[in-house]
Length: 238
Image (cartoon, rainbow, N blue to C red):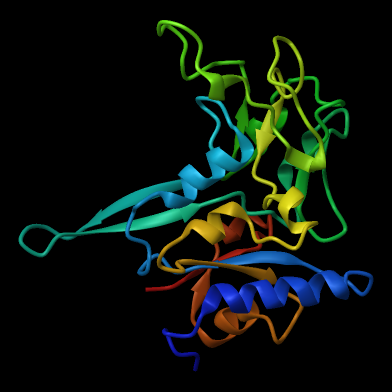
């Protein structure tokens, strides 16, 4: 059993480096989430927004809240919810223009240049993990313009200017495990930001990876597993 004082982030960085080195053999990215460790600080959400410059209404990861029991024994559980990165993604099946697809390492991504904004993928996703960019701005209605509303996004290792009627405005958007960071050997922004290591990321096919060990050594479940989407996000069971 792993001790809680082990430096998990350093371990995950080492796992990531090893996975990138063996990518030609195969990699399958996934997450392990322990709700008992989550304090509801939402540092993951803030880091994700800062990294991907997402506008109002678009949050690639959210923290759900669940209340249990009654006073004086009531308690609240916080549950981080990124994209489940399904192995059998409904969103890919329904896209009429193949704008959403799974990469060789299992990340479900978007091709903004193909997306026609039909939003079929949003309807098909059983986890409500897809969003539509209508072009909103945080500074809308305020005196002057907010500079951060016009910062370009660097998703998918490209620069996407935040301009009227240009992608990703008018497109469906989603979590992609910060793919542009992974290619540089960096962990997803949400993982780096979590102060309690409630979220662990890595290669599910690497028996030495921290994520695989935690899933193997703990009782886990996956959201709406009965639907057959085969999500690659595992939650520690309470």
